[in-house]
Image (cartoon, rainbow, N blue to C red; front, side):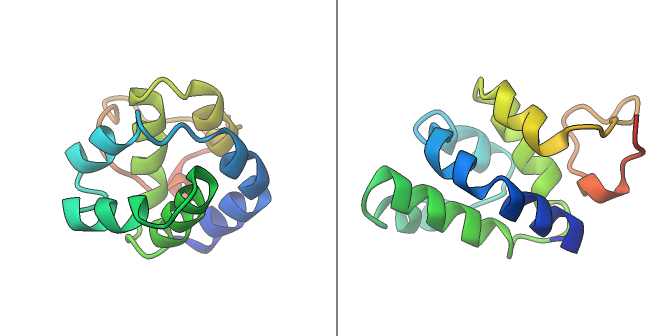
Length: 110
């Protein structure tokens, strides 16, 4: 994950831990190959919903350069538009980028 994306996750960590709806997020995370089924099971075994969210955010940082962009798309697919906007605030997407992973730091400012 890009350093700017890590900082963005850290900046909004408390809100993400509080508001993430994990149940609706599992399928998009799997569909986009952001996490494997085994990784999802490990996150789900972390304990409370907040502990699971904490584990997901921690693991997300290790998922490569496209992780943040894919995560934002997963948030949108799972109906968590407010969190998606929070993480991508002030950034534009490229035409035809819908459904493709990208590092948020590579997007132009609007």
